[in-house]
Length: 467
Image (cartoon, rainbow, N blue to C red; front, side, top):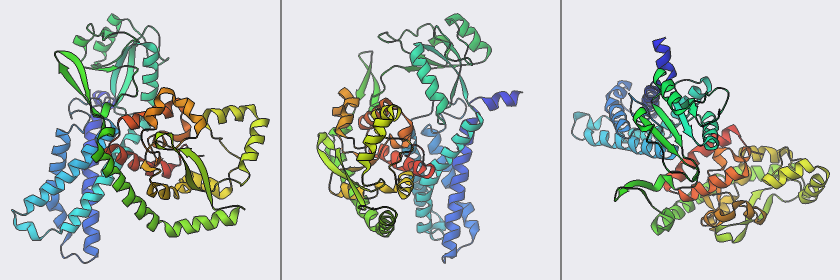
């Protein structure tokens, strides 16, 4: 039973993450060196065993970077996935570079192929995060290795927080008790403050989520002495958290926020990288694009490409280019469908999309599921109308859903893929979509784009939310 108690807490998770990182790194190095040997490398495979310093360096850097949920012995709240991806990438690069530098002072300097080490590093940067995604999904699926947590404060906010925690396989916290004045769910008992203290003491719960009341201050003095960690949550969901830093300004609780959108050199770097990527994509995908165009032409009458008017940066209209996935008289068919079905009309007004849309051609359904219909938009990137990563372009009728947030949304170029697409796509409501778009803009950075790009492959592979 002692093992079972530890197994059900979050203490196991950091060790599993460490094990996952180690196995993926060792497997990647072995695979690359084996392939390099098949291509003519003159060494025996026992050379892989002499790469052990890379593993030690990476684990050491990861521990210092708090990549194991705080630390191994008391796991805390996981860092944001974007920040985790940044730290994992840098720790991987740092480990291989340090190992390569150390080789210059040893007799093994000529034994190791720098090419094999370079490709091992590049592949590890991709596969280590993938290993973590798979591990977390397994833990979430079988409900293992969570930190028991209490929650208190505003009931409405707490209910929303709990629902997001349950659906997030990246979350390490599991709510066991509440103090919100009402039960959040049948599985979570609600107590008074004193009752919550007693319950947490009996069940060794030392983590508390405090949901700040609307318009209230931080009234947590009574609970601070009883919990090792207190996570304060408020209703502000669009704050630039990834580029804000808590500071003590004359003993006032303050934040300093960095506005990345105003840093011209960063925007220039983003534009240059997108042009390079778009050129490479158009060259590499030219033949597949011709095959897709041929299938579109054969399976339905009409043009190969579809041009749609959308709003771009600062609200300027432009024509987005796609492979045609609908019948040529799609607008006329849509009017008939909406006139005949009030339910579908509500769905269209809510999402500007229809599930099981009868206007979509057979090949169009496949193109949408795989997002291959978006490939011509690399031409929009070269024209400067779109970005690779960014909020999805919208029609003028959708501006009203953004309200005061539209100026923030329109301050950047729309993208082929974005945070909304990798967070649920059409399976989430429009209000949540607006929040994700604004969060992306406020927290925009190279690492945010890298995270979205990384997640895009999972979304395309699984086909979630695509219709």
